[in-house]
Amino acid sequence: MAQFSNRRIQTLLRQGLKASTKTAKGQALEELVCYIFSKVPGIEIYKRNVMNVSATEEIDVALWNAKSPTGLYFLPNILLVECKNWSAPIGSQEVSTFIQRLQNRGRDYGILIAANGISGSAQEISRAHHEIMMSLSHGIHILVLTGTEIGALHKTKQLVDLLKGKLCELAVAGTMFL
Image (cartoon, rainbow, N blue to C red; front, side):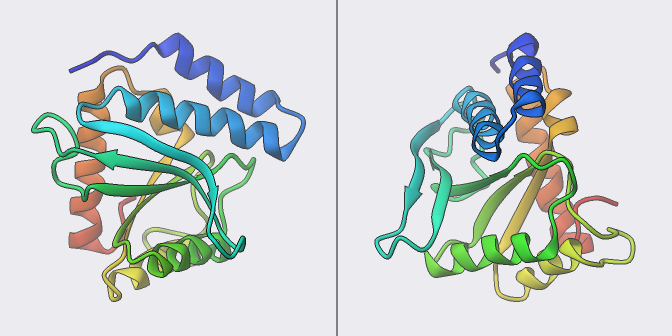
């Protein structure tokens, strides 16, 4: 498995923290997401920042997953990624909006990159955690990665194992943060 440049990861995380506009914060996180996922075997960055034909919804990053045996073979070929580089946890409304975007496109898996996590309690399944749990009843699986988790990555195998563990925990417990 490939190694990540921890220096590059930390630089992009810092750029996002220091950015003075929402756009610059988002761009730094999207750049980080593209960097880490492009290192995973079988993953290609298909498109970034694409509006739907009605110009009502934007997808931050679309990934093509060729399902390499050492990559994300357990996830579908098309993965949509939402990036939120907020200073606070992401609320239930933003999670619900991402779920709706996935449903509108017939996708059953999505990755939410929330720099400072999501709102509510995993133990109580409240707020954003509740939205993620409820999406399961509609066949939608949301995998959340935080800035702290990304900052701790050194190898692509760690990212693959992290997503695999989150997917299993989501199926077993209805949340991935217990």
